[in-house]
Image 1 (tube, rainbow, N blue to C red):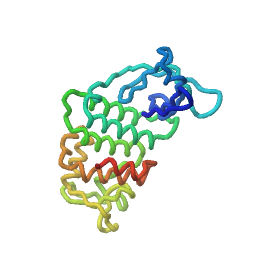
Image 2: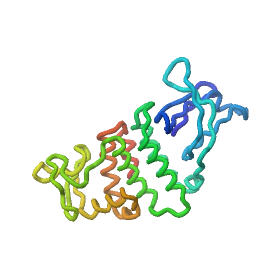
Image 3: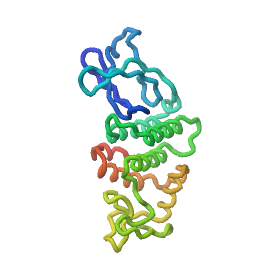
Image 4: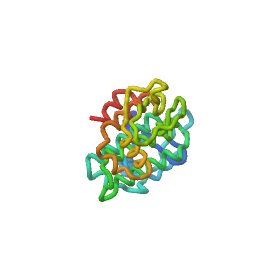
Length: 232
């Protein structure tokens, strides 16, 4: 997810792994020009890595890495790269350290595979919205768009509803409402998008990104300035 220069020729590599989740490792002499020290650390691809514990400290040691699943289609388009980079940054800032996260791993793999397709079914920004809402669900902060989170009363799908990203979803008028209002049509399209039809969101991206960024800031370690960059 990220590399940072360290010492004279090393790198600190941040990875999200299937077995161990979010972790950081030292890649010794990875910046050396010697071919034997070279490691493949390109983002957007799925890598096979070999890691080992170090005698002291939280960082592991990256022994080797190679590409297991290349995604050259992402690298050919700036919007695809921005979407993939944004979601990887969200994961880096929110996923707990050294904790396997099966659902989150599946989410990342599915998003990157979708962005790698020659012909996208939905725009990268629509895919970003869906990935963001699914990320909230993986972190147990998913927004309930079907019923009031205070009293539990269902909201008819055709009606507009107040939504509070801090309290976790819809808040009916009897329970005080909220500052954001979503139409019934947008809520229904968001539910369809979460079932695999992201293309229905093309006209709703701006309000849903606003709601998403507010929820991420309220419930995770994402900084407000990072979330604001989502909607620019």
